[in-house]
Length: 625
Image 1 (cartoon, helix red, strand yellow):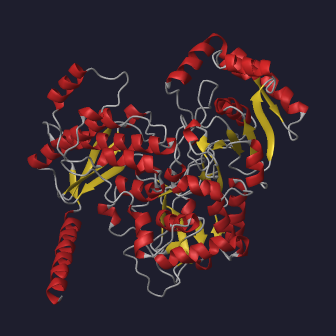
Image 2 (cartoon, rainbow, N blue to C red):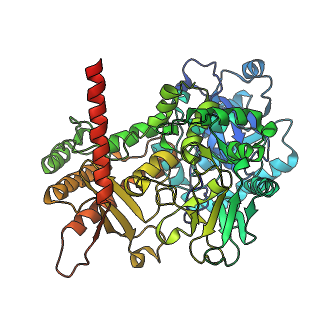
Image 3 (cartoon, rainbow, N blue to C red):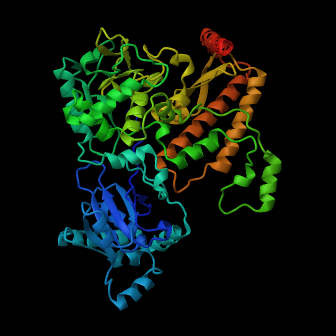
């Protein structure tokens, strides 16, 4: 699902390491960690260029190769440890090695000595001593490589020694955005290790690596299909990038000229809706029949009646929810949100340089060993992939798992609504649309302007405060959006704790955030269910302490945590911490403070009644047994 727009990304520089991940290709090396060479894979995630496979004579030359191919608009780099170039060719004849990447003069005895000596010379020597040879590399490319080397060396200058030292000692370089590819929106700082620990996001990036169309081409195809089916797309609407001149900027739905309140801006005919094949599907859990219908359509591709839509999904929409994360990302998120009762915070310190025993003792005396107060939200973080396997008897085939998670993050219960689902989420001042009942199969899905929309505004709908959102309005918050859509919403945000009988909605102080860009100091706009009691405040303070200590002891970058996951975890921890701080501040009233409205009390009582009925039903079934 399209995520809210974000600040314009920085451009990667020579100072920043490039991720080279372990591929999913089978290796013939027993000890991969000790492998000295193998096959380097350069991938263009837009599929405008073919994937290139090169023999990497020395594994440490990978960064030099990645730097080169990044200038050629390749954005994903993989490595397969292998015993020899010949053995790779025998085992994978269809994956032709187009070039050798080795040190200049490799092959002679003197060259071998020079190569050994060069290992200690530094990055600048590595750059000049690296040569690409192969039938597909022209003299022009070699000249370009040499020219770029001269430019790079001039840029790096006297700082190259510092750069080399930081790489050798493992100092993490500054993060950079790339905005391209399914392997995350960010430049990787370090590589994943075990291919078996890759997340579905990464697996499907490799699975769907064919010739892909651009976002613009897919947008054109979707809109043409919409009009052919009798739908409507307002002439002042367009699907484009935030910055049309920047091919890496966010792609979404925007307004190119003023649209007045009440205008119809989008109509999607029911003939375009991909839904369940069952007459009365079970909507309480994953709608298995919708998933299976989507699987069938994904396999048909161009032959599907939904071809423009399924091709759009396969080419541009990765599985975003956290069930698709890597094992390392899930483990880190779990340690932050659900620490064990016996968790030893101090013993888990990952600060560098290592703390002295005296320092650890002091921290332990100050903080003690916090007991688990409450599992921090979201509840059931990774449950959806298990739901597919357990409730739907689904397989572990990446395509099928992909379809299951796409249904979770893009559907309205059992319905996938093309074009409609390209609208980004945003509440508060971001929200500028309203729509009719998407569940009424007798009418087309229509979207209108809920207020005047100015030129260049992005179109936003709401995933939890809309006309068809049902109970989500009072129980589906920022944590739930993260669990099912894979991003941390910008302000306004909300957190609900029905077990405690409280909840709160938050907005930002626009003066502190730079005119309301979604990142300001949070304050409570409404209490949900009830105003916190003194006991609730005490619990929130303990939860706040828990998350703050977890930040110090657990929130450290690890090489096998995808940078997309790392950024998302950081954003969520900040949202959770800022929200708890705001709730504690708001509960401590001062004279003259504005009264905060309490909402959702009837909804809370309804929720409690449903819980009681569920327990009674469970007791009755036990008696019958």
